[in-house]
Length: 332
Image (cartoon, rainbow, N blue to C red; front, side, top):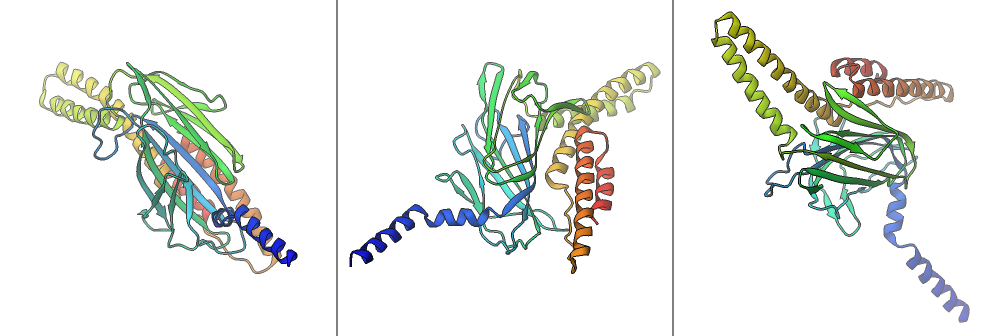
């Protein structure tokens, strides 16, 4: 009788020590990030129905998950979010399937667990990829014209390639960032701080603090709209003025404004492309170990080429059209 009681107590202890949610988390661990890109965009835009004058930081997370297990994955997808950040406001989550437009997904915001959760209609087969994006906002610290914010992310799963892009706000001065291992690239004259962390494991802590001065609360989107309208007016004025001197003066003004507008538009194009423009890789099944080996070799080489192309795109060495064409060659 005592042995039965002892066994019963052992079962209770094991059940308490390993609750169901722990098992579910374990089932999710066979999904890893093939690619994870984080976009930090202070004072880029405001959330819909934003009722205060306080500026925000827009965070975009673009992830490509791959199922490296031998079993199909159909469980919930869980991604941590910083609900504790001041003024946190969730914007949207979407998933992308091959050759199909982005679709918003119904999500559950679990502040208790610090996660966003959704159930995908797509079963992720072994070796298949799943693409998603998440957007949210939070409020930076402000003192007069000085702003400061910190970004903290502890990876919930392994990532084969992790990168972060930090865009300076339009008209910002004295911009500083705490990370030292990145580089600054000018995207049509706008500084963008690029950090490539490479392959990192689950539990890795990504932390960055940025500070800058900005004399107004105008967002990058608002500034671009204003400059675009000004450019249209300048073009109209230049067309109406027939005097040679006036035409030259007007064209110079219009040219300067056009340059500024193109800077803003370039940021929009690059950000949208990095969020939504990734092509999807296809998995070709092979029947023999020899052909599978050749496939793995080709896939590895293709991945290296795609990574190199991606860096060129970020650095502004190639445009979107060239990137798409070259990547298509390696993705087929």
